[in-house]
Image: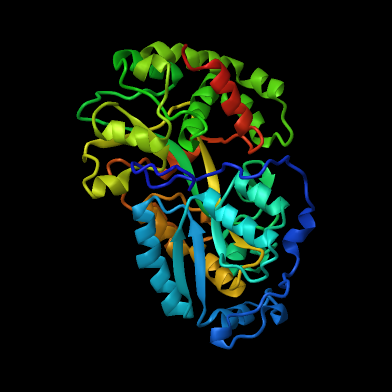
Length: 433
């Protein structure tokens, strides 16, 4: 999604807004309401009933309406391992179990939302997008503009059975209340990695990272914040400097001012400036995006890279050496959940519900964990013992960190309205002159 095509990681998620917004509260009572559609028609090719007549809280009726349908899933398409998983694991399962044909449409998130908003503003009642891989600022602004359908999560059997609906990572998306308009897809957490054949030890905290930069002068950098990975990486360092509790104040700010954010992150910005003399090009300029950093790392110009998730899939395909090892800071790294939402004018809402529900099944969550290193959104305590054991006994690749280690060092990301202010402060205060 949105220019985050970091080929050295399996996960990258966009949260750049496509319209200006300010966070507002909405009523939580919507979460539990039964959902009925707003008059969209079923797939005429299937002879299905008009969707306006469907009781979406009746799962049998949803399955009947979805049968024989095609459903489009729009989202960032820059991860070939993820695309392969969707096309070779999830899609065949939907076809076999439900006779639902899944069409994956990989696009930049800004292009997706431009397409959706254009159709909505033109009054197109039956659009082209069924459901979207989305989160953060994009979710908030899209929902506020009335471009999403819902609430729908209370109608998903797997959500009700296996997800902790009261978890903050389900209730909120970068500080914005989800209110049942999004179903969780997977969790991700910032990790760094290096070639252990070349790097004897990796830093465990900001102080050690500063020394690491000194020891590898000119061979360490990060994407310029504004790029998703760059903003997440500086967040890890800032949190390490000012402390997790102080940094997580940023995660719940709904209407922050520039001065409020500046006050919280001041010491972190001082620290980031202290890195400049030892970074690539002495911190006077930064790579524009994570793709550039990945290329520099692959070419040996840099000694480390970073991203959301472990790079194990690229180790398996030989794109990274087997000696690749991931690491995180003892002071923690930022993590988030990403979500799936249904377009307000989706042509196949029943099929979208079926597809989303299947993504939330223990089998598909386990498959993502095993194949893509995606942290599951399911509550392990809600699973059958057999399914719990399957997660616990999954063999990890050499570049993967234990799930417990990640979760024990997880820091909540700054809220959507904070992100542009954080990036603005960094741009004004950090790059060397």
